[in-house]
Length: 514
Image (tube, rainbow, N blue to C red; front, side, top):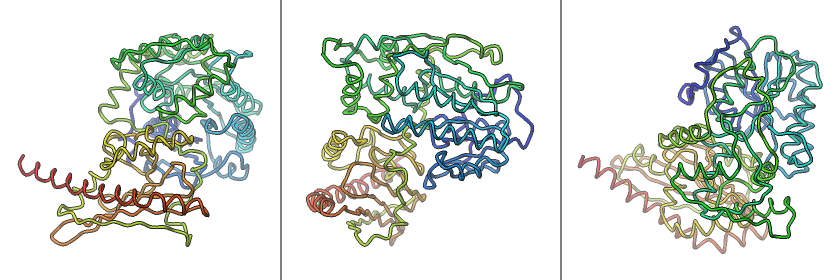
C-alpha cells in the first residue's frame, strides 16, 4: 500500500525542518498503533524509515522506496546490532502491556538496557521514547512505573534520549479511545471508585505525532524530558460524560467503594467484568484502570518553547475520530498487534502436521469473482457472520468468559480488509484479491484453527466458492472438541455459503435495475 493513502498529514504545519536527505530513522514497535501513524509522516518528510518488527510473520503494510524492514527482538542483542546499523535517529515505542505484571516489567527493563547499549555501539544521534505522564508517588500504577523506569534506563547511556511523556491518547483505534467508546456504548450504569477521581490531560494522536516528529527535528537537544497534553484537564467521570454526550448516550456512575475489596483487586475484577462486553484484553484494561489512581497532567510546558503549536481539546479530538470512523479512515488500530500467545504462530502454509482435520464445503455462484470477493470481505463485526449469528454470539461469549478476545474486538474497517487485520476473534493471514481470504483463529480452542475462502472460476463466468475449515487438534481434547462441534460447523458453513450466493445475486440484480 502507498503510505500516502494512509497519511493524515499531521505534520504539514510543523514549524521544524526535516534533516538532510539520506537521514535514516528506526521505528521500533513498528506494528503498534503510534508507529502506524508515525511512519507515513516521516516518509512524507523525506526520511529513510526502517521499521523494526519482533515477529517475522508480521506483514509489512506499506510499500515505498525509502521504507526498510528488519526483524529483531530487543531481548536479543545480536539481532539489535543489525537493526541499528547506519541509523541516525530511533523511536523507542516498545511496551509489553499484554504480558502479566511481573513479566512486562522485567522484559521492559531488559529490552531498554539492550537497546541503549546497541545504540551507543552504533553511534545514534538521538533516541525518542514515548512514555507515560504522571507524578512519581506511592499510588503510581505498575504500568506507569514500568514506563518511567524504561526511560531512566535508556537515558543512562551516552546517546541523547528525549523522553516524551503523554497521558491517554485519543484517536481512532487507540486503546483509551476504544475503551471509552465500548464503555459508553454498552453500559448505562458504570461502577465508580473514589480513587478513580484523579485528573488527566488527554492528548490527541495528531498532537502526539507532531511532538514526536518535532523533537527529532529540533537541533541541539540533549537528554531531557518533555511532558505533553491536550488543552483540557479532566477527571475520569468528565471524560466519560463528554464522550457519552458526543455519542448521544446517557450513562450514570454507581459508587462501589462500599465493597470490602482492595483497590488493586477491584481494578482486576472491574477489568474482567468489562471484558464481557468490550474488546480490550483484560491485562491492558487492568493496567489502564490502575493508572486512573494517579494524576496525569503536565507539570510544566517546556515543550512549548520549542514546539509552540495549539493542541486539540478533548471534545474536538473525539469528534474528529468519530468523523474518520464514518469515512472509513481508520488506518491503525490497537488490535493490529496479535495476542502475545498468538504472535509467533507459523502461517498455515508452513505447517506439516499430519493431524490436520479439514472440513470443506463448496457452492457455485453465477457471478464473477470480483463481485463475490467484496461480499466475503465484509464478514464480522456489524455485518455479523451471515448465518446462525446466535451460535457465533454464544461462541464469542464463551471465548470471553475463558479470557479470549471474543467477537467484540470487531474490525478496523467495515468494508475493506488487509493482511494482519483483526476480524472479531480471527485475523487475516492471507488475502489475494478475488482469489482467497484466509483467517487464523485467535479464540481459545484446544488446537489451532483457520477458515479459508477460496474462489475459482466456473463455467459461464461464475465462481466456485470453497470454504475450508482447517484444525490441528491437541491430543484428546482437540479431537473431542471437533467431534462435538462437527454438526454445528457443517450447519454454519453451509448456511454461510448459501448466504453469499443469495447476497451476490441480489447485488447483481440491483445493479442491473439501476
